[in-house]
Length: 427
Image (cartoon, rainbow, N blue to C red; front, side, top):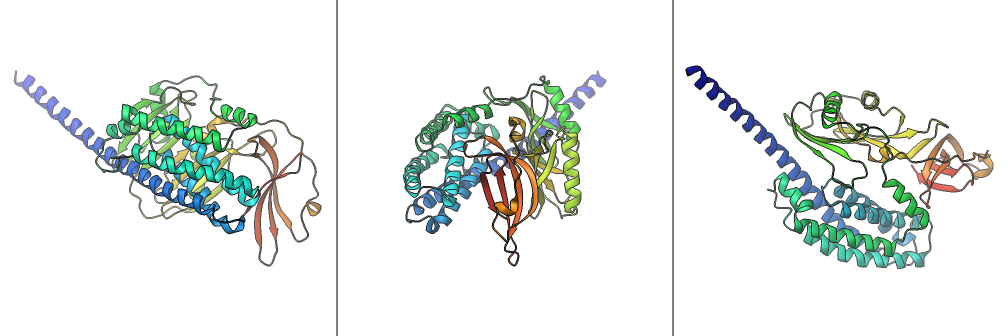
């Protein structure tokens, strides 16, 4: 009898310790996500107001040059708001429509600065100004009460997506934005087809079970995968059905999304305190490449790298095996910690889509005849890039230098068949 009492008492103690530990970890995750979501909404709210101001300011001037700063601000702020909204578990109909609208608004402002009809710009942007005024009001209604700072994870999800009131607010905004997009930036037939292709899953591999997704997580991230909090599935209608795994390990919290088909890492994010940098650029680049190969992403090359105080951000792009061309629309973004060299973040959502690439002739070009005297081609590669009709085109990817005294460098993409200049960017 004494043994039975002892075992029962011991079991209750162990259960209590486990429950207390799990509760504390849940509280840590709740606090961190609460901060993340609050910051994202606050940032989006502030920049939505700045975007509205920039749009109105750009309507003041007659010529493109006078409003170039405002147009650049429109492009930058649109991109920033997209990044903030991407971190929120909002209603899918809203996020999809809003991302599309912001992308088109930003691209239109940027392209019209370089080339475009002034009358067309003012007509489109005037409509956008009216739309943003309405959207700002709807945004305030949808986000009311979300910045109190003490909402739990379930409360956030209810407010942003699941509750009748929340769903109604976000769905209403999604419908409004969709209508504004169709009115201000109408889709052509080719754009519509291309957009539909992007919304479809190109993954043909067999589905994996939830246990296999967990094993994949532990294999790739052994240092943070010891204690899973929640394993969910993506919602119905998702272009890429996936498993959503949330975790907390010591001071680190985060999540990983793994596709149900094929078990590919779709995205990963971990939040923790950062220490002093100990890893240099070359070591972090090597670690990033090793991780991608371990995660079965082996057809990539590094295209871009930038840093902040705590991490290096790498952009890898897929390489077409048939001609060695880079596919800029199929990137993977990575964030590597300077203190430990671990992966802090990964986004492979665009890479997963795998753009369909059509054969295209490659015409020989005499670049000395193509460019003005004094312009020198320093590097030439092949790359696929999306043109204005949203079609993937094979292009000569050139690095050129003009005015050797001032040494101005440009990245230029020239269609290999038509020799049309698709983009020109100053470095």
